Image 1 (cartoon, rainbow, N blue to C red):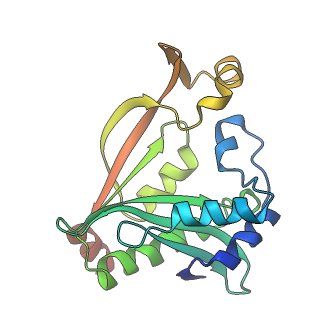
Image 2: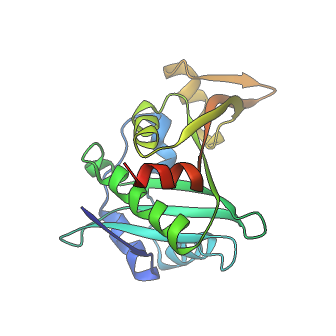
Length: 189
């Protein structure tokens, strides 16, 4: 069981105690801020009043294990995208799936949205399994520029998930969605 609530500026400090991903494909998820100004800038970049909402995921003992962002909210079409980041020390413990179930309640039942999208790297099998587990469905696969272009040389040398096109590194991504109709049918089971 987890607790979902709005992420506050004070919560940003808690992420400094998170573990570090050892797999270079996930380095861009490591939380490496070290100054109050850096914390402020990160928090402000995540907190956009009308187009984004960000929630922390805590254990029942109030240990912050992750955060989930609802971004690119389009109120006119009742759609948005989801992003999710969890402390590497707490992966594969079920907190991600539980956190997503809570965010889906918020998204569909409280915000009255119609469709939630997400994008996941094809190599991230653990995340894909979690998304499928809570009801997301795959609707396409595409190659796109990788999120972290700063470590191209390292990733190209160590991982066969990446390729270069015109000095830019690419990876395969899976695009998933969950509709309110599908969510409602899952709630009935």
